[in-house]
Image (cartoon, rainbow, N blue to C red; front, top):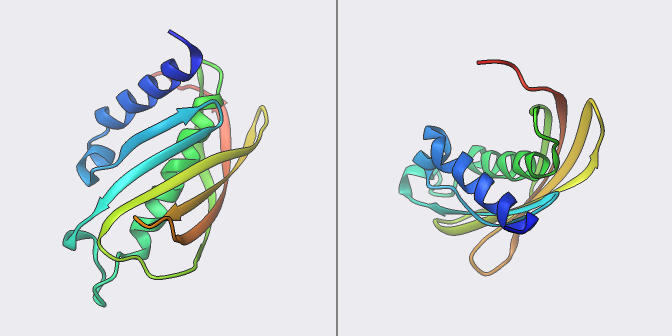
Length: 141
C-alpha cells in the first residue's frame, strides 16, 4: 500500500471510530501527507436561528480539517491538540454539501500551524481558518 492510500485509510478509520465526527456525518474525501479534504452534509439540525449553517459547525469542520492534516504528517507515537483557532466567515452557509480543506503550514517538534478553507457545493469560499496546535508524545490510555 502506498503512503497516500495508507494516510487516507488511517484518517477514514479515525473519523469513523469517533462518535462525534461520525455523528455529524463528517467524511474524509481525500488526503495526503499534510493535506486533507473533508465533506459534510449540512442539514436543518445544523442551522442557527436565522436558518443558516451555524458558524460553530463551520469552525468544527475547519478545525477538524486542520487537525487531520497535521495528523497525516505526524510520526507514529505523536499526538496533537488545538491550542488556538481563528476563523473568518466570508459568506453565509446554507444547508447542503459543504467541504473543508486543511493544510499544514509548519510542523515542528512541539508546535504546528495549519490553515483551512470551507466551501459550499458550488466551491464558493465560505470561511478561512488558521490554527496553532500543540504536538506531544502520545499518552497512554
